[in-house]
Length: 267
Image (cartoon, rainbow, N blue to C red; front, side, top):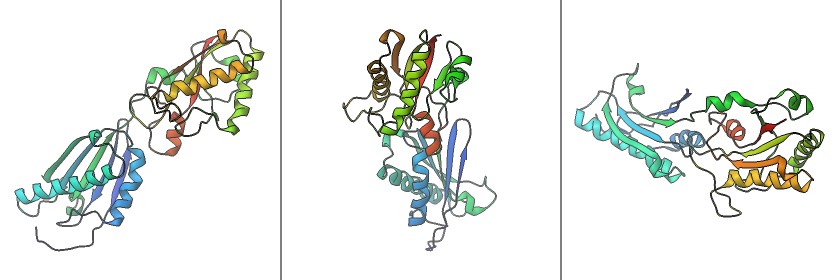
């Protein structure tokens, strides 16, 4: 390839399929330096790949020698990896970092000059999903759900990284209290869930321990007891990130996974 300076043209594509998120970043001839425009493209992708396992592969078109193209493709991959790491991606989450050299599998030369980032997406638990109901918390819902069903409690929101409810969530807690008072045989398990990481539980900044979902479930448990509900009718458990109900591709899907749900133990 000739050593000519061009303005880098960055194009991108983001696709969400059942198991992967993929982003392509395209470069002009003989370039591996990220411009402000290319950094903006990667910035938009960063929230979607937080704590996911990544493959980063660099490519070139078929112009130039094989050895030169291999070297250039490695430099492109490294440029992208270094930028992602500098913006919060954990280095250990990059499982593959390589230059693949020249390729001609795209329709144009410009599309072959790229770095492809592939992130492992959330594998949803289909058995859990089949039991989960995303319905309004009211008596009609309680009447029709069965033992073993799980009801997501929308509107119960916590301060970020903490196990304390936001004040505007208290009316939802009042509604749950009323449901339990009006259905004295009802027993539930309070379940805490987090988003935005593939495994384990989140850091509770109030305690310094990695049991955020458990602490949030326990906080609801304690609130209900303070409101007069017998502890014999309640239990609580944190499930961390193990029971996601959405693939995390945007802020809305992350919020859906960051939730409290109740399992109907007895009616």
